[in-house]
Image 1 (cartoon, rainbow, N blue to C red):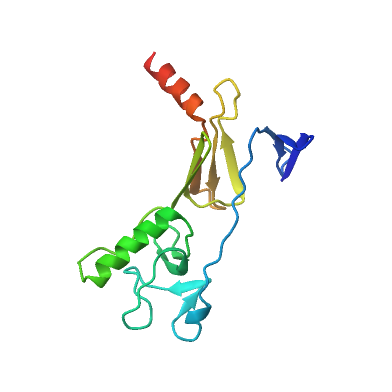
Image 2: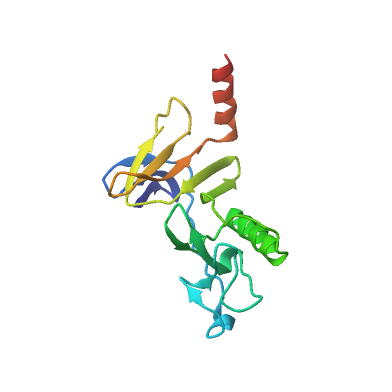
Length: 179
């Protein structure tokens, strides 16, 4: 991927497949890493986080972990993951709190959702990205609404990015739907 433009102003993104996508704004996610060094040798760690079960209980008695520091089973992925986003932090914190209080509950099971809001731009991602991506909604007549669907090698949907519309575009879409 390459950013294209002049005088420090981005005008498009050139994708690895040669496609050139017009862009006024590019958002880059920066990875973070929770500090689990203090738990080294005291509790089971996995993928850079404290390994917990579906009730958020760690391998040490009385220790529960949640949020960015926890690596927990994500059923839709079929593996343990460390999901570093505010939604995962909220869901795992509620799960851990109920577990600590011995409140009966089902194992944690949710579709990971990531979202961001910058100025008047918002976006949501459900699931996970893969190397196989299919874009939609890049038609400039509709406004800046766009999205993509990620699929696995076996052609199963793995994730979806939706609603890249500005607040102004959302208002226009609502008006068109009503009118």
